[in-house]
Length: 271
Ligand code: PXL
Image 1 (cartoon, rainbow, N blue to C red):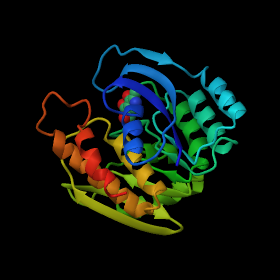
Image 2: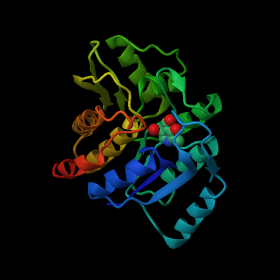
Image 3: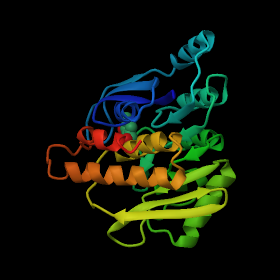
Image 4: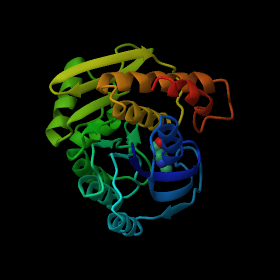
């Protein structure tokens, strides 16, 4: 199986391509990459990071791949960086290069705010990508921004069902909504597929670590493409993220990401 992942390369900081590539590879998937930008670090918690924009290069890479007759069994997108990158991702996912599903992690915000550098134009471009998605993996911040409703950190069950319907109305075929809990110390996912809504909850570790959304999306993508089913793939991803946080929590100098590498071997045994 060959899955193209389209995301930035944050050289330091354990997120986006530098987690997707090792995770998908460890889980048996050939993982070509399309880096939309190169950053010295990710944008959360580092000052004066260097940002090298690659958006003008992407269509040339796409053209070369098309000329070579290269194909992918799926496309998985994460943090992209600019609305032009979103347009190229859409063109690749729906063109001759991709023979399979499009899995989209919108990766543009958290805790009710967009990440630095993103605005409503980026969110609008992302709406066109999610309209073409087979599986959408938003957190609540991203879900509310995509459907154009104000952020509520604690939606009721009815409100969650409404968010899912709104996302499906935008064109997403299946949705895994992340960061949902019914109690203070609980978190998890609510999934939508073919009119079915299911959920999975687990204890919440209330310390924030960067890159866990990208780890979730990478593990989910591998599990889903290994035919685990939407809820089961989501459970595997939730449990892996939980173990990564548990594995990192005592490491005070490691707030920029989670220590996932030693856990990949045991994860791979599930596949
Ligand atoms: O983890 C998502 C992500 C990816 N890439 C970059 C980021 C972030 C989140 O802040 O800054 C560059």
